Image 1 (cartoon, one colour):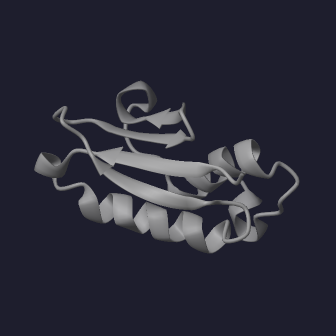
Image 2 (tube, helix red, strand yellow):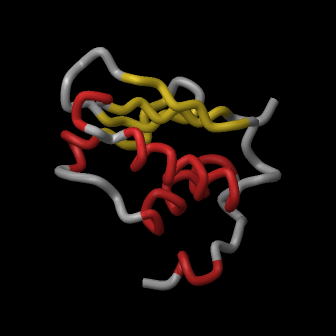
Length: 92
């Protein structure tokens, strides 16, 4: 079964649009590799994390902010399709 990405975001912080943008980017880039992307409102204020299945690959508080979309794509690629070339997103 293909992996499921879950983006858990704080609705009180207004992070729904950020989460939706990230979901769109991941679904576009990993159309063949992902089962889907779920947006999940957090019950904890200030929370923003991204999981692949049940494994947390990103937490805003641990990271010290939000990732650039390029960084997020690299994190997801490394978990779901390490051989995938991300084109311009692979360049430093």
